[in-house]
Image (cartoon, rainbow, N blue to C red; front, side, top):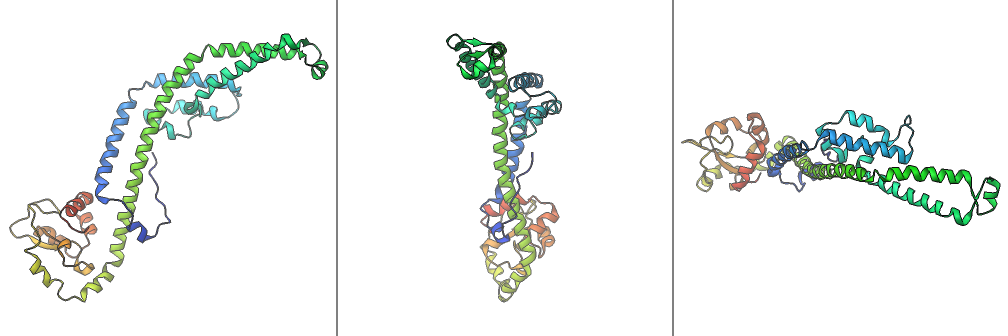
Length: 318
């Protein structure tokens, strides 16, 4: 299934301010995975031979009802291509599969067509006793009489549609089966698109934040460099910033000599405030140095979403 595409018209500032919670990325990814497993298990209960049989029945009757040429290409002419490529995955995406014949989604129109044509034909035949019949086409033009050829055509059409009407129970059964498949497909596709849309926005926002950090980090540092007391304040804040049992970055032991780290480095505009300070292990502090948070997490292969969630739960501005 194609991923949701974000718009390219948003400015970088608008992307950064997108109202989407980056902490929910792991939740959305897990939900997508769960949905994919669930829908595959559900669709494996459908019998592909039964689906093909139902689709073939409607395909055949649609050609009869709408009188499509077997050699001509139409919406229904895609049937054989669709049938030969049918898999469980293709069935799951039926509601958004524009290569599928239309009757797989709107087969009920065939039954309506059979009933309406049969009624119209019988109404025409019922007028014969009152109007009379003639062999002359000219007489039929200037009188109310019906030409014999027209009568024969109506009779043949009635016989054809009477035979088709006897197939309606089978057609309706096939429509119900395909309708169930289509409904479940649409429900799944709609849910997936909603989650993928949120994920795409979150990824767009995160990428914009990373670009902002890379581009403006040094510029922000100039403002904070004017405050010579920035790092000196850390000493006073050491007793205020609470320590956790484990390092918030690597989840290892904090150690006997933890370091108080600026989540966003002073050199990149980070301030010495409680919300930007965290106790971490000496190893992580040494590796992080003056790197931005995203850069450090990526280089060490630490899960970004989970780390952001941990920092946010500790009241940090991330």
